[in-house]
Length: 199
Image (cartoon, rainbow, N blue to C red; front, side):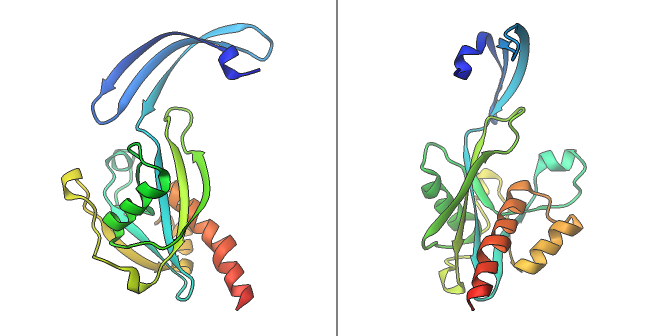
């Protein structure tokens, strides 16, 4: 049975259309026992996004960003967040968009990228699907110091860390961003570990 056969949407109200779109939907859901239950949910639509973590296998380093995130701040985070480079697709293909974001935020031109996975990071309230990538880099690929787009309010510091240090920062709580944790663990488990065995 398709999900469209289990849901009857009655009313959708736009609550906010400023930074992104917040909607409230009234619907009926057909439960597993066949009965219909009236429900309502709010959804935050910010579009889909992409994230990429560059890694240097020779030096065992990664490039990350550090920046202010207001939603994290109001939820008790009293520090800048350390993250992989990311951005909204804005109707572009995920790989095309993340290449532009990496150049803007990290000052890096990329060679081949490797898709890792795509997933919903907070499906209880946010519609965004996030596309994950990794790519090898070396110091010759740096075009600029990065820093992001000032017109969009970005004030980004670029960090180059060893993979071991970055993993320690997850354990210590210095890295708290979910998408970044996923990519750091992927690189540690599947890429640098493999390259260690081959060397």
